[in-house]
Image 1 (cartoon, rainbow, N blue to C red):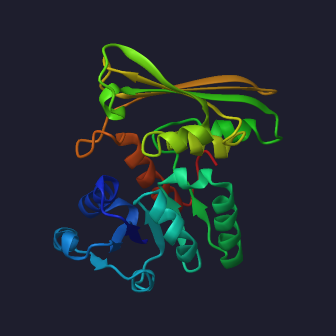
Image 2: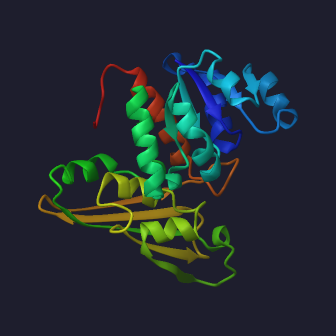
Length: 258
């Protein structure tokens, strides 16, 4: 599978490095779309890829799927166009908190018969949440996120609750810190009904997420403690791994947890 990536940050670099070094099930990054061609020329040499700053040339470069690894603004701008030609994996899932945009990409994907894949990111249990809501009988979903205080720019001793509200409100206030709330919401009861609490904690060095859900199925609790990426301490290692996991699932003829 030939992969095209939009963006050149830590997750994009991780995918390029791992697929090049480990030859993961025939996965190969072939093309990279960036805004600043000069700035990222070295990446083309380092990873043997084609570099583009023209989106049409990028989409026509012999790739099978596109991984969006940029930001919410780029997702809003480019993903509808990408879906006209390719399937897409969206990492900046916060973009889908905008219900009008979510409906737009759904309709464009359906029109062109191209799927949109949303990795589970830095959390787990997404399949269980979806299954529990299979008949629309999931009653309550909440997410409590605890991160190092400095990642929110907080200079405190101990812990401080810095947000309580809906997932929609959380992603608006913390667009770079709480993408996980949106994938959880889309799998379950929506961005308005999913409750989020965010805690800044000077005593922790890892990102902690606890998911709780209740419904006619019973109840469940998931707790994840994430190691940060070495190249970007604000991004969980599991978030990067979930993108590779999604690509590997697409390649495999055995689909687990779907």
